[in-house]
Image 1 (cartoon, rainbow, N blue to C red):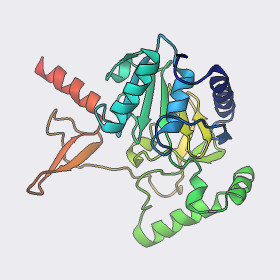
Image 2: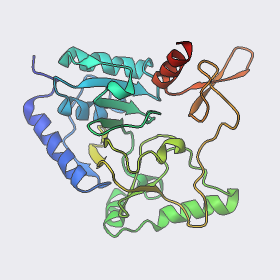
Image 3: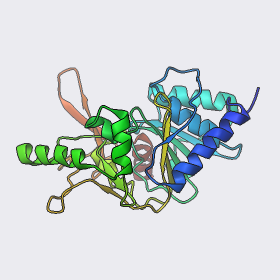
Amino acid sequence: MRYAFLDEDAKKEIRRAILKAVAIPGYIVSFASREMPIARGWGTGGLQLTLSLIKKDDVLKVIDQGCDGSVNAVNMRNFITSVTNNETTFDTQKATLIQTRHRIPEEELQEGQTLVFQVPMPDILETVEADTYKAKIMHANEDYSKLWVLLYEDTSLYGDSRISNRYPVIVENRYAMDPSPIPKYDTTKLGNSKALQLFGAGREKKIYAIPPYSDVKPLKFEDKEFQVETFEDKTCERCGNSGVFLDEIYDEENNTHYYCSDTSYCDKTLEKRNK
């Protein structure tokens, strides 16, 4: 059986698309998305990037909304290891290749690490322009007026943007980019990251990238502060962490409980406090 499922020609084609995406930060590159043993829309884009890049000495981490133990993360991890036999870890700092869905790890990523995002809809202009041909022209002309109008309408009516995830960002002062369905809390982590960040949409057959140390800023008005999710005085009931992204969990009596979204970070904090 060939290493990492994909044939070498497929890997080369995907790697070429990745190189182009890295060379033009934020630019959407088309690629020949392959059929995978999972349904399109469940992470085939990110999976193809991971399988094209993974080397025998890579240490793999897979998360879904911050969790190492969710169904998507477990199944992805099991499949990748079944076709590579690579070492896996839950520890963000030990991983060289991280595949993620909907979150960026709490711990700062380092040089040499690669973060691969599973992306459902790659073009942020889809939210304001249904015609893909027109959207391409808008990108070429750096015409993001419809996004600005959307933000203006929200701000004038509600005081702030209602966009809770997939918040539009500008990469290297040029391309408006969809950061995948990460929360606004994670948007500020995209800029000046030491790690290579890759985005793959298998169903839409698109790849784009943010190279290390790139300038990435949320789309916002100069006189309006960019607001992210806050949890006020809430702390994780398991480890006591505050100032992190928390998941709201409801019990049978409809009481609200708060836990770290990043399970690895939660485990490490708990381990340190128990020593």
